[in-house]
Amino acid sequence: MKISKKILEKTREYKDYTSESLSKMVKIPSLSGEEEEVIGKIKEILEDAGVEHVRVDGFGNLIARVGNGPKKLAIDAHIDTVDTGDPEQWENAPFSGLIKDGYVHGRGTVDQEGGAASMITAARILQELDYDEEYSVYFTFTIMEEDCDGLCWEYLINEEKLVPDFAVITEPTNLGIYRGHRGRMEFELDFSGISCHGSAPERGKNVIYAASRFALEVEKLNNNLKDDPFLGKGTIAPTLLSTKSPSLCAIPDQGRMHIDRRLTWGENKQSSLQELENISEDDVKIYVPNYDKPSYKGTVYEQEKYYPTWKISEDHQLVKDAQKTYQELFQEDGRVDKWTFSTNGVSICGRHQIPTVGFGPGNEELAHAPNEKIPVNHLEKAAGFYALLPYILTGTGKNK
Ligand SMILES: [Zn+2]
Image (cartoon, rainbow, N blue to C red; front, side, top):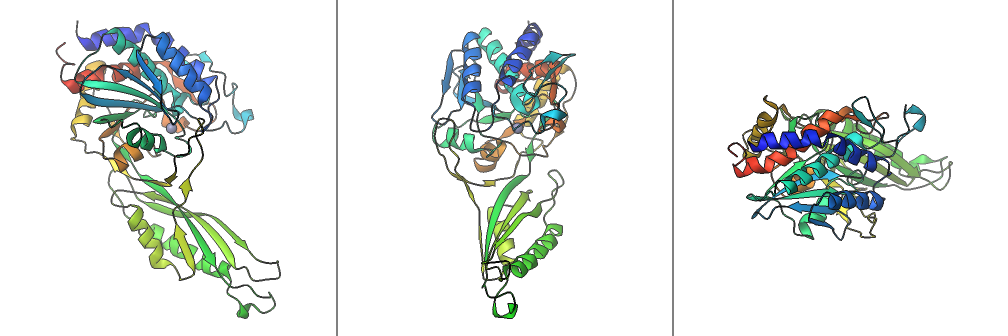
């Protein structure tokens, strides 16, 4: 029997198993930095499924390996979620994990424990098929993505020396094949002025004027940023301005501005910093802030808040093999597209140039929204995709 047919039979057989794995995860709240319990649950499910090589790294990521091939394929899901927002806006309780009418309901189903549940089923299937091809498959269940995308993968690559040849991100794509997204970064600006009595403002230097002039230049800059036919346009926006003065009857001498920058192809940290320096006056300090929140293990792995843009070509072998996998399983062409949001790809492909594609269950528009829910049939299809891709990459998927 062809391997794709065997895999499809098994994903059908494990349809309820996949939904139930997801339901178990959703019932455990797992905000960024609070993932210990859900990581423990996923470890238990994988071990019960007979997956042999399962371990937690020094940061708190869970890594499961199937196969012993010389090359490495990583399939990644972040298993932290954002908070629920107003619970009143949810029809069912956000952590219900309810399986009803062909959907699994609750916070994290789409973004993105659904991908994680499909990965568990794929790992189980590969283990049962005694998978042993050219690619060792690393299923990574990673932490803190919602707070600092890619940080978990900086740890895996730099500290755990897990450097895959290819990677798959399982964030929601509505079962499309995604090959990139815009990057992003944050800037902080410290303005300094000279305080004096409010009754004689000419004696001082008011940071509100300096910051306002700067903000208006940023608005102009936003209209002139680079565009990319695939990824879209870069953007820039001030998102916070605060000032300090000795009293409300004094000229403020300290100001802080926060800037959100979305980076398209050809834009990076140096180029966007330069753009801001070009419009700044002397008395402003511009810098990229750091992320230094500890993981649930207490590990601090500091990183600047710069998340590089990434994309790979539509002709890349990985995109073609992802297409082949899709065609082999579902007898039609997959839709190739990009994400509007950011993922762990900023580290894997953005910083480390490891070719990466996205393929995930669920509609990305429901990410971070109330009444998040995921179709059970998406979970089943994604599990089949993750199980077959390593065979296709090896070139054995079609003839076996
Ligand atoms: Zn996500």
